[in-house]
Amino acid sequence: MKKWHWRTIIILAMGVAGTAAIGLQPMFRDNTAEIVTTEQLAVSPLTTHDHGQGINFEYKWSTADLPTHTEVYGNLMPSAFNKIQPITWNFRVYTEDGELKVKHDTPVPIPLSNMDNAKAEYAVYFIGNTLHRRPNGSMVAEHRLCLECALSVTPSFWGKPLCTVLRQSLVIDVAQGTADLEEPQHIFTTPDTVVITKGSTPTLPSRYCGTPREQAIQKLLYEFADLCKNPTEHRLNAFADKAQQNIDTYCTPDKAWPDCWEEAAGEAQRASRLIEDTVSQLYHADFYNSPLLTDFIASPTFARIFGEEFTLQDDNGINSEFGTGTENIEFEIIPAENAPTNENF
Image (cartoon, rainbow, N blue to C red; front, side, top):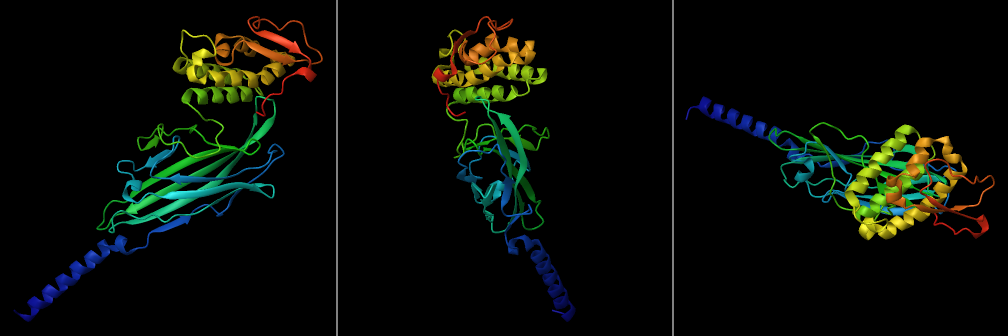
């Protein structure tokens, strides 16, 4: 073979080898994980409304079984998380030195194929706290903790990278020692976003637990108590609509309260006891002179959730009349010193 033929073959071989080396770059790069927020330790200052014994719990978030309310956006079919071994992200949430703190690890993603490269970026941050009214009238703070994991998987040989982001929001009530995954309030409308609606139940010190009916009652209890700190027409109408939707979904039409809630009848009775403080305070405040609020408490919707009989504690300035629209509620006025003690909610 002529000398220039050998030269040509060698040059071509080197070109092929170089091209292959470039194409295989993802295979030879290390898989990485990093935290993209400024601090490894997320912190939220406690307020005067974070009374109680503090909080201390651990939470494990596994990508193998996403919990309900997890947001997923970016590449979905397939997802980048389908290309790696499951990740378990570990958290410890606790109070210390007047702060709510979150420690966490940054697990390195491992691709299922040795030809791929994976990179995970984690974000852990608080987005402030808000005050909420509880059924017993106390004001407590809720801290919102956002957890995000953005995963990129790059195949060898110029394959198109996959990028998928998972996001959760934890609502933490230090005063009552609870933490719940929050249902996303603003759901993206783009086709590359979904919210997990039938996922796993995370191991958390949750306020909302039990069957779907029981959780529905619990959420209605807390939402109504909270809106009573500012019962605007918009909030009342929105709550009334949501309450009726829950009644239509979960209540048995031909059964009286609380049996209409089936296995959650006991939870309905408990909610009725807890809402007594709220109803009592509203009564003593003349229902904020709000006909809409007065009428709603007297409505069949309210009665279907909380019943129709409430015990009010004595108070200076009690009127003998309860106002138009409340005649179907049976009140029993008892002296404060003889009043039963409500649960700490």
